[in-house]
Length: 264
Image (cartoon, rainbow, N blue to C red):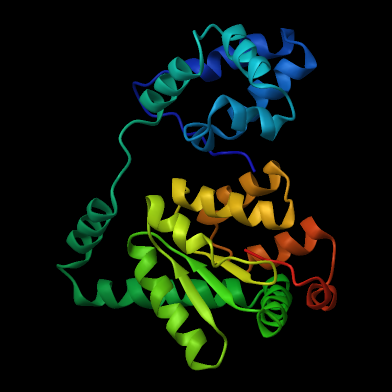
């Protein structure tokens, strides 16, 4: 999944310019590395050279050579360049303040805002592909050993509430909502046969990537698969993950029951 890179006024996409000018001159292996970086810019900001090498099936030395071939001293300078390009991200508090300010002067606008949001969700869920995907997700949940729910920050609150709802209907559920060593302790509970639900926003948390890598270890996912999941954390398609795992693992809901596949 390619990252959407939008050029802001007054900013120069130095990496993009060098990539377009030099990528076609590189060897296939070096070109594969720089193409991966270009398509996964936000993910790369959190990656080491070794992680990029694993995702591109190359070596960390090849990753460094590819970056240097575009005129950067190394991965650190590349990340600094990309961070300047992305600029300061808008925080959740700023987004909330902007929304409240825009709606506070008119009650009807506030009502329309809520109703339109629910209407959009209903429209997405009613699509034929999502109906099938939701049915598939339910089939996976019905045969899960237990459900692990990941969420950090505001998503962590929703994760806790979701876990309580699962527990109330008799499906054991646990939450992964901490950081650092505390998250590592929570990840011990993630086992083959669990269903993993990821809750996140547009940019994947480092903790979210760690959780996905642990799921990958249990099922031996490819790094490209994990990166695709990470980019889809911002998807407005609530049934994306059921379709993704059906495609990635290549099996139907009935075979999930036999394999006890962890799913995200």
